[in-house]
Structure formats: C-alpha cells, structure tokens
Image (cartoon, rainbow, N blue to C red; front, side):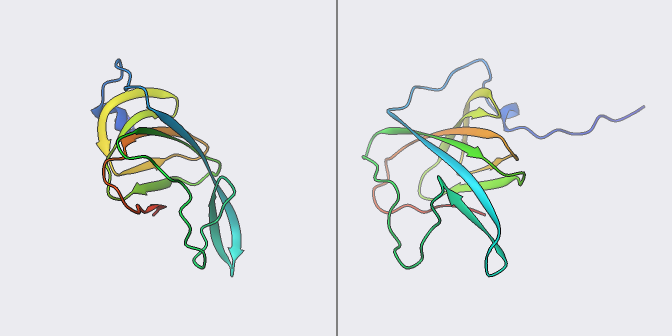
Length: 132
C-alpha cells in the first residue's frame, strides 16, 4: 500500500460550512521580506513599515469591545508564523477557505497566501503583535 503524504490544515479542526461573525472593522496587512536588509539579516515589514526600536510607536489604536478582523497577506515565499499577545483569535479564512471555531494566538501563513483572523479587543493596554 502507498501512503498519502500528510497535509496539515487548521481547517480540520474548524467548521468549514459556517461563516464567522462579521467584524466591526477589518485591518489589511501585507507582510514583505527584505533580504539581507539589516546588517546581513532579513528585515520584515507590515504594510511597508518596519518596526523601529527607537520610536516604539503603536501602529494601531483599537477600541475596547470591538471585533477586529486581521486580513494578512504573506508577500514572500517563506512560511510566516504570526503571534498576537494578550488575545486569542478565531481563524476565519485560510488560503481562501472560510472556517470558523478554531481559536489560536499563533497562525502559520504559507508563502504567498492570505489568512484572516478575528479577535475582540477585550484586554486593554499595549499588545505585542509579531512574527516568530
């Protein structure tokens, strides 16, 4: 017998026939990689903005109690793990496939793929959002 290769999918754990609740606001994010841009190390940007250690400025200002959808597009060929601190999010779309009911705080975004996650801003204060 021949074994089929295992294909990982978060959608195995969610409801593919159910749509997630509509968000109050959608935030579009594009992740880009600049090869060897910072002293030989790769540099990542969100919507062409690179994190500044000097400024340490908040990029987004959210309102408590609102449901936000992060529509994230990976514009590189790297698999990119994205982590949101202090909140859990619901996976709502993975590589074009709608899903609901899967709660995470890290999601892997495949190369040149899009992922959507929803969360409720219910833990006020500064929140770290980054890649691993």
